[in-house]
Amino acid sequence: MVIEPALQQQLPLFMLAALVLNATPGVDLLLTVSRTAQSGARAGVAAAAGICVGAVVHVLAAAFGLAALLALSAQAFLILKWLGAAYLVWLGLGMLRSAWQGASPKQLMPGRPSAASVWGDFRRGLLTNLLNPKVALFMLAFLPQFIPAHSSHKTVAFLALGALFFVQSLLFLLLVVALTARVARWPALSGAARWLNAAGGLLFLVLAARLAGTRSGAHV
Image (cartoon, rainbow, N blue to C red; front, top):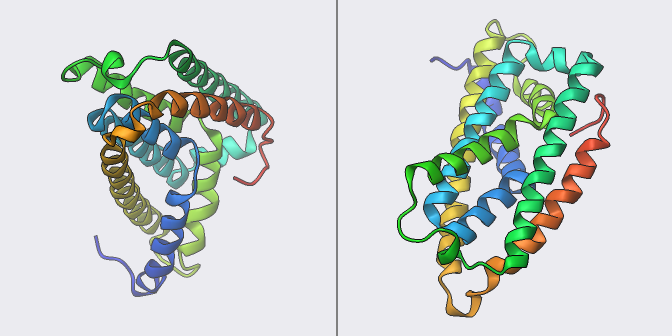
């Protein structure tokens, strides 16, 4: 894929902006950290992969106009918004239940994670991202800012930036997984998973309420 010179000039600023976005605390970062701390690096990697695949879907939707339709259709936005909020509530209550029960990471995921548990973490990450209409609208608002108005291949440029965003997001989340897994092994933090579940569960409930109150025209 050949990137136009005008777009190449925008890449440093785009990569910096994408890094800031990836490092900003939110649902994706919280889910990656919590799954890693609770069930190990493999669970964190699976969740991160699901999140990034969800971002790819949003990029494709924005590139081919589906996100624009979502922005214009109040009913479609409302349906996706409530589905996303309900899913965040489900995740949050599950984390609070784990914290209340006081299960340790070893009790929650004994031995080597099974293929089913890895797929479950991938699915969590994927649905958390897909069911957030704010991500779709954000992609629609964010990526075009770095595409020159006179570009003759705007869709190709959109997809190229989306691919770069995917790669950077995946690398960043994998770094988060590696750091979290290392910190979680510290003896002084052996009980941290329970408190992380409690804090994460409450935060997911807050994010669900915030998402439920989002209007289709709101900034993300």
